[in-house]
Length: 142
Length: 394
Image (cartoon, rainbow over all chains, first blue to last red):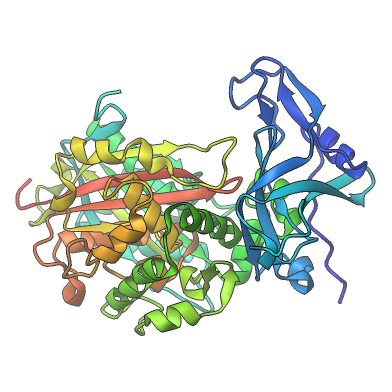
């Protein structure tokens, strides 16, 4: 039985710069030139002002945990040997909330409000995924 | 915006009948079979000749490449109005609202709104992996676990911010299961104790097994009609009094603390000239207890953040102050894909017609039915609700 492969984002003109930058270890997001808002997930127009004048800028990669869940039943067979998946919603320092995962930390260490930083994984040619990791690895989790 | 401007009220719109197919946990029928069965039952219950049906709305995740026009062909209908579900699990209620608007204007007189799906755990998970572009591209690569993972984060946030407890959410599941004991069509009818609820296996923390619906095959429908088609009908009649819809998201806050119902909740009851205490029941979209909680807040039964305490302090049973999901809801009956929420509308009409049998809410004359659907980036995008009233004469 073939090993299932990881579901990947479909690369298109709207997200290619971000996915390529992630393969290079950078968090590149759109920023609206008209209203200055940062945007995630990638779009063709700004969801705050409908402007099409969007620039790609590098974000700091830091953020705060908004919520999280240890997912025991992932939706795709690729993840079953890796369950539980530690799903996380992170409010980036710049504003947008990104849903990703915390693959480097045990679930019991995570708290709402914890500080995290982005990590990167190359998953294909010019294709990377952004993950997060707890910033303070030395706490007791309390 | 003044009360009522974002809500629609109707003078001449009725729900003339309802239909509900059998539900199947294994070996479901095909989606088209559920739709056809729902159509046949609904038209028969409405007591109108099939040639008078001049509008059709359908909702099904699995019907493609079939569509509303080919369903009309299969059913032998000639129509002035067609609509196909794009609002996910909220399609049925959005279609009922659109149908009511068309019927009120006499664009058409009798709209059949049907939903049906052949759902299973595997087909649900596969659907969740590619449901729409943001889910496919920005959630599926992380193994997010479908709606379970997303709404687990919603509940955790609500618990953290407001002190909501698992026991409070459990009361919703347990109470609804009591109601299902009197519903022969429910797939889960055995009593559920709080201990069983709290000890069940984790699905996506903090959600456990009985926080999640059982995907199944099933379908249902209603006939939204003009008063004139009921001339030869018998009381009681069910009038569609008011409704509202909101599709919204927060581009910077996908872990929802409130849903679109907050946009219209209190206004809707004011438009219907109904106080919260007047309602004989509520049929709230229950893909998860936390979503029931958000509806209680956003529809104005309690303040934001207070749903847990409200649930704890309120008798939600059929004989209580606020009967909730009187047929057991999707949490007990099963979620038949896009038809999941339709069972709440069917149950609401059933109750107002006095056909609830062993689960009849005594003296129910007014009810609210609420819907939710289309999981996007982290949250459900569309909400809608309708208020129904029992009438002894047209």
